[in-house]
Length: 249
Image (cartoon, rainbow, N blue to C red; front, top):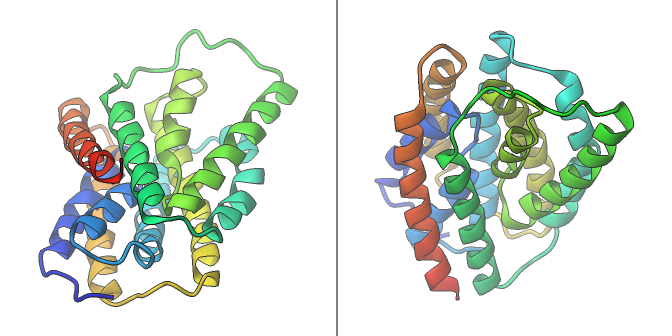
């Protein structure tokens, strides 16, 4: 892999800080930064997934400690997402397709963060069978795409939970952080199986995202309001996603 530019760890710190405040790992933006910095697109997914593991795992710990973990909410999504994230990670894609998929993932993250985070009210009650059916189908789809691109998939799960009114913002953030942690591990295993991973510079990146994610998730899991901060980040993410889509199309 080409030498890691010295500014990248600092950018990773702030990505981890802001993303962890809303329960994300930041994988899509790590990928975007590494690709835009000129690193080989074949090797960057593994780096991004390790950083995702660090941030999302720390985030889940903090959200769970604050009482936002609802096991019945997340388990149906994990059954198929984890093995399909591994399967997606085993598939190699061309640079153009990779860039477009990454751009779309980032765009989804930005749009999701633009949404108003309101408590889940008026949700239609679902039977356990319907919840599991929806969770298996959605979780499998989210997991496969996450492994293919090299992200954790929280950008897909969290808006789904909010739009379905199955969770409030912090419950969705907690569920997303666990989803990201497990799918990142499965996707990383798949990426390693391709033999294209290069972990040069990982120590500096992992340290940066650990401290950024620790600080951000502590604030996000607590009472600190996030609307303005979230929208500013969303604008940046959408800008980068459009730049990547224009490059890939």
